[in-house]
Image (cartoon, rainbow, N blue to C red):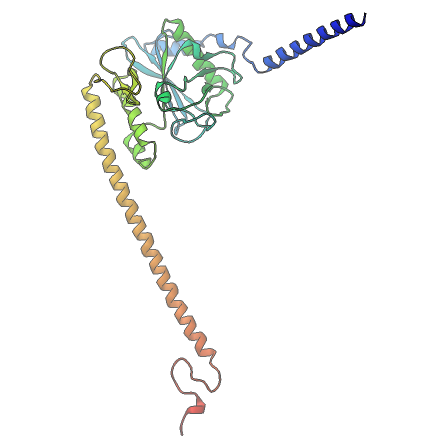
Length: 336
């Protein structure tokens, strides 16, 4: 009887433990309300139609950290992409520059490929998709990190946080893109809009070489309005490599398909950036020289008035029978 009682008690304890465990897991899961399947609003569908696109067409997402914006571009009937909508980013973690290691609370930068498997319909942060960090470039540099998302809830811990309404619409656009037979969409993440003026403002950044690397992909999309094919070789991004098949991330780079307009733009931008950097250097030198001159003048003025103060103090502080600092004899030493 006692053994039976304890067996039953043990079974009850196990059942309670299991139920509590499942309840605890469910506390970490949201999105059970089918929010990931909410249809696109009619105004969104009509907006796509007005620009010559449709929900099932291809998509590109671009993020600009400094401007705190996320852009959704959609493929049109001409084969090129057009900007559909710009969404405000509530928050992102860290500073300008790429992510390096797990726990550095830094949001990634670079080119990423988003597949259906990276979509997270049951995110703690309303809805989300994983950026795919670390990608091939990140891994070649030994960078680490996990669960770097674009999500809702306006709260970031190394991710890009959107409003719930914003991520709901972005998520639905991605879902319909996949339903249209597109196996992926490209995510491009930049520190800022890659103009020479912005590059010059950050010319002393230790990330400049990395930014010049990804700027080529940025500029290709700006010129052609089509996403570049990207891969990694020599531990750098390569855009539109000639040939086919994946490259060795640390191996030699092959030739790339040349775009004359892009080549000309990159060359002109490099010259413009060098000129802006030189102008900034000269301006900094002038400013430093002016500040040094002002400091020297200030020290000279202070020294002058300090000397006057000492002379006056000596004059009025002279003892009887002593000569003042003027060199005039005191009454006691004057002769009749």
